Length: 362
Image (cartoon, rainbow, N blue to C red; front, side, top):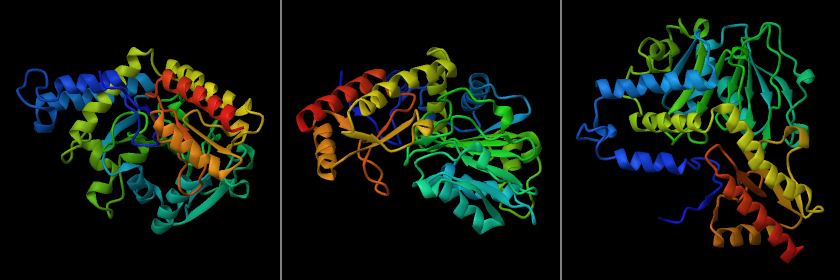
């Protein structure tokens, strides 16, 4: 058995070992077909079954109501930054955005290219170290939608609760925390997420969309960028990223085998508590970046009081089999991404390494 790295990469990220092993077994011969799933026609009965089952599993595990569609698209969440405003913005009705960090900023910049936008709240004055208070979010009365980034991977912040959106369509980029905890889907008009952090490999993007928002996309936008194109064809309008969809299918079955999304949340909280406790009990040797009430259970961002020690920490951690602990280049510092598939054992090992590093360098 190959020794597995302690993988804390921010994305593409850790996948469950059981899933990788199952994919390995089926890689050359999928269910006796004499070929790999990657070689099959996306119009074949075998692939159609994978496509339909993946959507059905998403519905079941994430509690998606019947009046929502589950789409399996390409282009990553970055394409959704423009596809969403293309489909939903109308003259005189701006897209409202809550500015929480790097990814919210990218979403807003793309929307500005398409139409009118407004900033409903921002935590930039706090270097995006917190999620704005929900009471501070000011939505223009005529807004087409309110867009949030549910979890900022770079800053390590996450919404503990979502804005009340009775009078406006709430839209969320959940790329880095989808299915890490249960969510009331009916609060949202559209949820989108790249799969490569919590649900599978890169290459497929999940879009969960309420029927009334996507049944009639504007006719003037390109066919591939219209939600109704993909709704009408059950995500099989063109050749899908079939292997990525198959891998998402296996990951969803793995989540189900672990007791579902509520159990995932408990598991994630247990994992991150080990690392946050190590930070909080270090007497200031380690400093968490995100404010306590905005801490993410997916991306733990922290600093050491001395940048030379941070470099040493990264170097030594790599020598001990840890991968991906260097903070994003835009903010520096250190970051541990603890997505669903990161085992508890990896987090235990990291907490122990951190305590030992402090003892030797404190």
